[in-house]
Length: 591
Image (cartoon, rainbow, N blue to C red; front, side, top):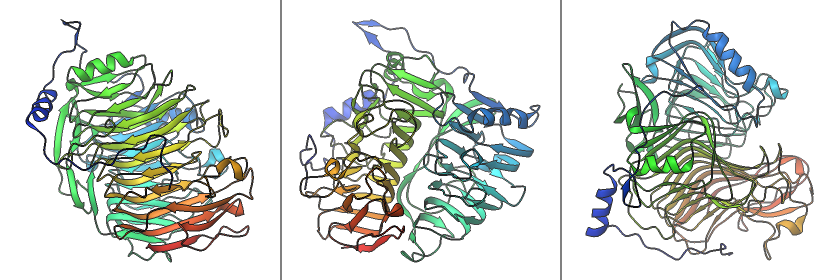
């Protein structure tokens, strides 16, 4: 096995805080004003307007369709553009709406329950801009709405980083583009689809804590946890991996209107969840008034953002692109940092974009971190090195937190996300080293490691990590669990030598360290498309110690069009992929 550049020392969980640590934690939970050199600094104001890129509608707003169409026209093919938008709909009923959703666009209802905001119409993603190919329909979202689709079926043809959350579709849901072209998504959570879900050409999909009226088919990897109406576990034929419940989950915070007042609702943690969180009407959780948030707008700097957190405010990033020259540091328990409209943070001068302390209950959600041209050692760190506090009662969570290296321009980062804190929930992330756009190439957007987990009892639900120069995922913590993993190895490896890992041919997509005693994964796939040198051999997609406590279920590797091959699925287990046909190799259970 291969050690990381800085191997984490073995840790054992500390299940009790000492008196001093407890006192510090209590003090940190009390909002205080920032001080500088012994003098009280000017307070950062909370609340305020939501800025020009949050578009708020009510049923009486004139020409809603025209405004929505205008934004879609700008965003339909703006894959690496700079505009960001959030379309927010007040509670009520909206007739004759077809909201087509393009890049960097969030559409959401402003009710406490999805049924508070109803469209007699559709929220649509299709792939006409890309000749019917949906594999690049990234970076958009639909949340907290009820739909009565005009045709009876709503179309949501997306791939990575395009969550469908907290939605109620009174009909069917089609996950494929018109013409059934390629699609490579995606993610549904806390949603109710009364009719059937039709993936059709979708290669893989993860659905969590939802309810569906049926599921039509699967291509390679369809994974479900806590989904009422999900098909029975049957991997590999059909390729369904089904868990009755999700071990631990907490839904994403969201903006809503309480009368005329904006608030952010923070759902409670659920254990062994099944079905939607809002079935009984009012969900469990707490509301935080907008006045307790620093409403971050374009032009804000990291010093002001950090001052707001230190003074006790939460963060609401309005749609925009934020360059920062120092790390955003969140050391206060229960802090919410919520982005609207794919708010994007770019670290300048090689700094880490976000660091979270070893504190409980921090919520990072709805953010895109885009690497800058100067290499960052890390982009997101959850907990300091050797973090050891017990957060099982109140985990930190990352939800719809995406990372991009290159594509919009040259970017570099050694490791994208490092999770040191125990009990962290990673709920839907796409960590992507670019394979197209601007500023990409084997060394141009160098990024050796995608996600590294050092903390114990970390759970990943919907883990998408792609194209890293070495390991896409490395896991060192104990009792880690992953439900659904999607990966492609780096397309642009120039030759076999470039990916050689000592005596091993290539770096595994998902590696569990030899020191780990307990780990488990379900519904996990790795694909290769070595189009620069199709003769490249990848030893395996997965690498793990052979121990009683290390278990995997429903593993798959695929050679796309025969561009490169896998010799095995996991370690030396599983048959090789071979030839020009895209025929998967599968392992139902390991060991």
